[in-house]
Length: 367
Image (tube, rainbow, N blue to C red; front, side, top):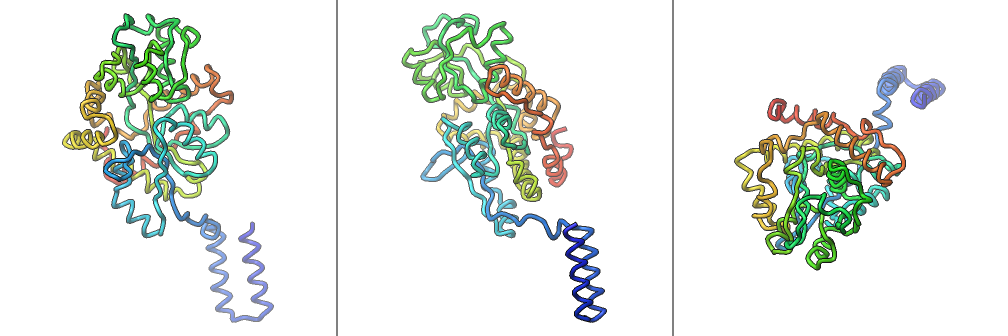
């Protein structure tokens, strides 16, 4: 409507001024094109930067990122495409101890456009009214472990009923804890859950302040130091019990700049394609040792999976991802972490991965 009024006004003005007929014809042609493709006039101007939140650590005096983001940050194709547009790629570091809260606060404050982070905090954020979208799935998921002191007589979660368990509430592995309890006919009320971040939880276990600790691969470090022993892990459970972390984008950014979103997602696919090749497995695992955990810990965490290394890194959407997030929403509501429902179908945008896989000629690689 605005474009139509603008064109009509311009033509009338030209006639009043008795301008050359040929010029008026050119103006009319331009107006026809504008009316047919109004987005040309009203398209959003590209941003000066793309801001991505990521878990970052210092190594050798440099800032490095855990997992896929490190490869994405070094992607020459992505850099060249953004340079053409004079757009800067800005990585926003977040602390391991507070990833969920920091990323959600940054999304809410419009300080970031994308983030690599977990499933439960993403659901919590969307339930609060801040809309983000899953634009690129991560790998199959991270393992979670139940650790007890070395002298503990507990052999299962059942043996810990009524005991103190350190768990970082609101973090992705809380969903796994809930599944473990439900599978054993237990609930949160059967335990004294102590809300501690991973670093504080490890210290509490070592000091004997808690009877168990529900955590990630740092469980192997505690075992190696003789301050803990692993009595359960997701390696003994269905794959959808693992903790998922993905690439999430602000709905506002994704809808305004789908081409820029596509560039980032395609770079992410290039990264996981390289990682997923068996000949690159050792190099990738060795590189991850720069982030604080010994290589032996990283390898033990990665070993004994029931899928191939290639399939573990598949970025393809599957019904299992939707089911996983339905379970996350259900957990968040049942435990009071959220009050409003979250429509999982609205969270997931599969078109960017589909286009990226096609553009890279990987249509049959993970099938």
